[in-house]
Image 1 (tube, rainbow, N blue to C red):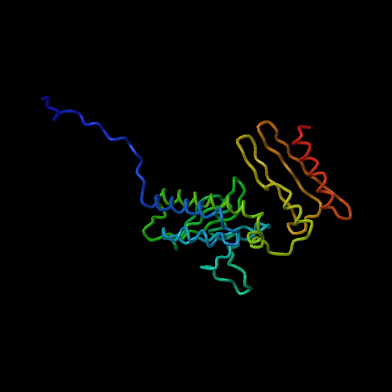
Image 2 (cartoon, rainbow, N blue to C red):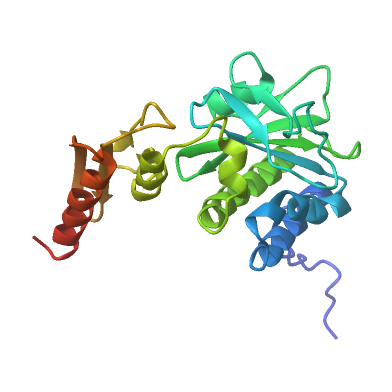
Length: 258
């Protein structure tokens, strides 16, 4: 018999170390994704917290208003505390930690509340708001795995806010600080996101006044070869109706290869 006592041991395949916090946050992400398929826009905040609760997380989703002046909490029947006027809480973009996370597109933490993180919420490059994540004491807010996990959750929340936005009014009404005209209702549904970026270019647009836009609008199309940007200025008795036709005609021609 051969003596294998001096044989060089075969190392086990290398696997990256996965922290318990990363595993818990990954479960939250998966649960949000699983539950999202049958969740209404008005129930998003409640669903997010139901998925996060087993990991010791408390989440508050703030969406930015059309003027990009303040961030408004999505109503959550389980946790929100209404303000005296009956609306959910809000924070200002200027002068707040949440506002800094929104404007700088970077996670922020407070020395006074070390277990609370503010994470920007984006859909692509479109800034939608911020996520306030109150961590369980066993989770280190400076742990890269915790921050990466919270950023992934915020990214999924951004996609869900956009996908549910056109299916109900809950997210829209939370964003609004005033009554919107008929023309603005139409235009905001027709135009693409106000911000877009890819490796070749960046686009940004503003529609003002947000609640009474009138006949001004824009459109763009970015594909493999085509990068087209168009602005529309329509005048008349009902300018928003005059915007509808050229906008749709432009889209028709582009898709017909003209």
